Length: 376
Image 1 (tube, helix red, strand yellow):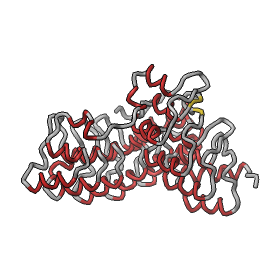
Image 2: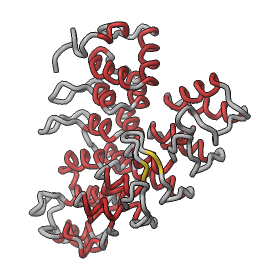
Image 3: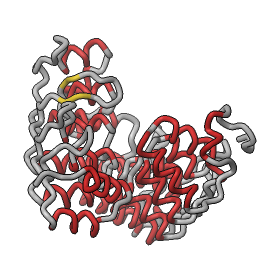
Image 4: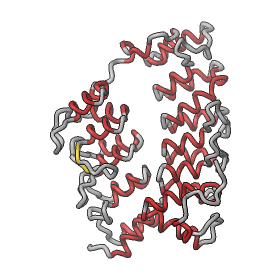
């Protein structure tokens, strides 16, 4: 079925605003998911919104995991280009994404492999995930480079090496026996140390507590073990690290065990703003559900909505506004986003039409940004 412009606009709006039921309804009516959606495809559009549930829904309805839009935007490459979470990248790989498929960057218009883009983006975790799943370091890009040559030129040779076993890793240098056991995944050994009275809160010479080490390993079982031995005293730093590393299940577990959502740390950050910066929708929704203050600013005076607008993430902006975020406190960043992005400009105009309390109307966008706005 050939989709009309109105159908395309409806689907695009539903994806951007995370309206899963509406997308299901559109699909049921016969929408061809393997057709261009403006410059994207439905799947790549969902990937740019970093919405895991929406991506799964579209894949479950026979979207081609390797379908290329006319502009050469392809799913796995787009996930790397947009610095999506490892959960999204792994999902695409598990569903059969061609790990070496060339794609075009939305940000610099270059065509290269997903691994090459991960190296350019300085995304070590994504690069390791691709290498572990068979990415070809030597596949040439159209400009003659390879992931290997880019890693060499950018001094990022460690990006194309598989991670060594933890017990041989330099990260064990300076560790306490307990932290070393956690990092090595030897939980029986860790439990014996804890039962013998070892301090569960003692940092090593790297100022890393056992609980932070467990979070960095993304080991929920280790986190639970440590909390049984009073490591809850070190939850604050571990919680912020869990948010930063996008460990959704660990974030939920730490919240259940007393983590403070609205704490401001020494550097001025808050867990909620950190979640906005990582653009992990699942964690953002969890924090909102558990009581995050939607307008709690960092020390620079930036509210979560201002940070989301600066990240150019329309889906998160929409979530925050629906959660009650003050539009006026983020007016400058929203204006800048609207000037840069046509989709968001239409969304922003709709906010104005709905009567949101924006300091200046959309017609004033020709003025210098920040005019009449409160200084940060």
